[in-house]
Length: 222
Image (cartoon, rainbow, N blue to C red):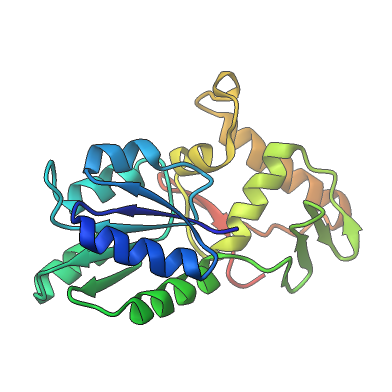
């Protein structure tokens, strides 16, 4: 089941969206303020619908807080149809922008489009690499890589967004589950170990891109 968090303070819009999404099989969680919404975001949330005009703070501020920890796709809802608002929303990390009034059918279409882009299939392939999400295994040249849980989760994150560079903080927020395992160079150690696993099979092969001062990601062309 797909979990969607709706952060919207107007009861009528809340009810309309909730009924529409639940009739399509989605699980909907509700929040009426930015503070409530931030508190309800978790790794189990697949997509966030976020109203710009909330009573305690605007949606742009809420999204900035969410992006400190989560890369969850976000669709903005707004009554303002100005180019500057759309540009600002997209620049700070929104995935789409829909102007009120809108039809539930249009919102559903946009949700499905974003989920198709952001949700990997059960088997993702990229040249010599393949990841099986149901088995939680990474294969290279037909060999199964013996990865630790953190190493596997890091590769899964990279596969979802090839070419994207993640900061250490983004990787730790998305991958690490135990706070006591988190320390300054933990991500560097995981990346070093992943590279070592590949070199055991092919010494000159390195699918990980490093950008000094920025972070790590999966190379778009391997």
